[in-house]
Image 1: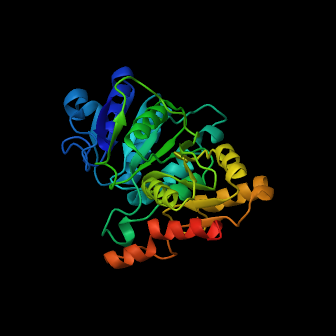
Image 2: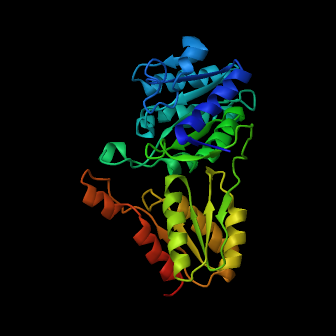
Length: 325
């Protein structure tokens, strides 16, 4: 079994699907001549030419719209945003176009398109380049929202997203592109909407997704040293959310901690908290605890970033709180 980087897993997924289906193409800023802002599309221009690996102007509204129109006419675009912060320029096309087209056309037009790129904090990028948008897009009927946490999931979920006939938001992280993980050479597909129980436990359920799975796993290891057995669940996608796996786990552990990078209002963890208290209230031995970012734009200074974002220490404090320790 080989070990490859996160960016390589994404590239393999796109290349394998593009070799099978000539209707698939990649379009975005710097994806061709520059090999991608984060080198995800390294070498793809050489194999597929400018017809299928297409550099765009800095005009997200424009090339998102071109992609949606292409998808409505039988193609299967992959649209790369250099960062999802820039997707705000194109959000009208995504929400009012891609997400609603199947419904508005009475089922006549599918929009098989993938919008992918990095989201969230990636260091000292300050307020306008460090936002999380998973919950924004997950709020929208008609979209699927995938947030992989490792190279294996990234490849299997991206292949599933490319094959899906619905528009999919595929959110990555600049801080994960160099991460290495085991990825099989043989083909595999992962189901969108099925969470992964990364670590089984009996004392408390810890749910997260994306790059914050690193924090979740580290916390589980540290708590094990203190005699607390943490069950760790990786959502993989936040629309749809695998509520069944979470609820089943809570009924076993009787405690729930939710770890998420975004702001507290209308977050993914807010929704999960509601669903769990509606469906597993009698099984809870402690209130649900959320570990999220403080309700502030992310600053530039590293000390302030550390203060605002969730981390291992804050998450362990939350686990101890639901354990009444």
